[in-house]
Amino acid sequence: MENKIVYLNGDYIPLNEAKVSVLDRGFLFGDGVYEVIPAYSGHLFHFQDHLQRLENSLDGIRLANPHSREQWLEILIPLLNPQFDQYIYLQVTRGVATKRDHAFPENIEATVFAMCSNIIPFAGLNHGVKAISLDDSRWQFCNIKAITLLGNILHRQEAIDNGCAEALLVKDGYVVEGAASNVFAVIDDVLITPAKSNSILPGITRDVILDIARKNDIPCREDNISFAAIQTASEIWVTSSTREIIPVVELDSKLVGDGKPGSVWHIVNHLFQAYKKSLL
Ligand SMILES: Cc1ncc(COP(=O)(O)O)c(C=O)c1O
Image 1: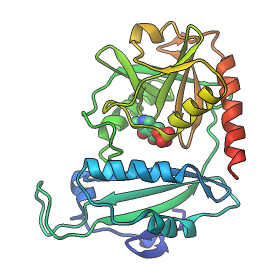
Image 2 (image 1 turned 45 degrees about the vertical axis):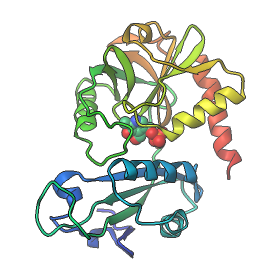
Image 3 (image 1 turned 180 degrees about the horizontal axis):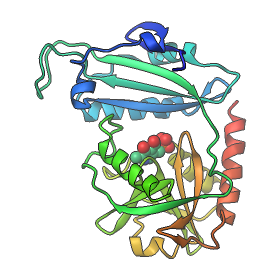
C-alpha cells in the first residue's frame, strides 16, 4: 500500500497508521459526506464551489461543519504536491458513538479525514467510452454527496460487467446522470444537461462546462433529457472532477453519432483545458 501522509482528526500521519474506530458512524451506517477536489500544479480547482457543496451536503445530513473555509484550506494545503495534478478526497462522518443506534448521538465530534492522490489521465478521454442505461435505483437525496454509495457502486459495477465505462441512470423516463458523473447531450445542435434537483449531484465540472459554453456562445440549456431523446443525440458526454469531459461513443451497444467524439466535445474540451491552465 502506498504510504503517503494523510490527515485524520488534526494529525498528519502515514496512510497505514490512519485508523478509525469500528463504532465510527461512517463505518456502521455510511453516516457522512465527502468531497473530491482537483488540484492542478498545487492549485485547488474551484475550491470555494467545492466547499459550498460540502456545506450543502453537511446541512443535508444535519451535521455541523467542523471547520471554517480558512481552516479547511490550512488542512488541505500540506497534502498537495505542486509537481503533479492531483485530487483531494475529504470525508466527514458524524463521529464515533458509544453504542450503535440509528438516531444521532449527542456530544460527539465529527471524524475528519483527507488524503491526496495523483490524477491518472483517463484512458477513454480521446476516443470515448461505452455506456449502458440502467434504471436509477438510488435514493431521493442524490444532491447530497453522501459516503453511502451502494446504489452508485452497484450501477457502476453493472456497467463494468457489461464492458462499459459508465452507467447512465434513467428515472421516470429521463436520463438524470451517470453512476459517478453528470451527463450532457447534444440534441439538434444544442448542448443539454439536466437542471439541478435532488435527483442529481450538482457537479462542479458540470457548472464550469455550462459557464464555458455560455461565455463562448455555444447553444446550451438546462433541461430534462428523455430516454427517447438521448437516443437521437449526436453527442453524449459524462463529466466529473477526476475524469473531466468523457465522450460516450456507444450507448446500449448503439453508436452515438458516428461513434467518435463529436465536434462540440472537441471545442468544449479544448476550452475546458485552456480554462484550467488560465487558473494556474
Ligand atoms: C453521482 C455523481 N454525479 C456527478 C458527479 C460529478 O461531480 P463533479 O464534477 O463535482 O466531480 C459525481 C462525481 O463523482 C458523482 O459521483
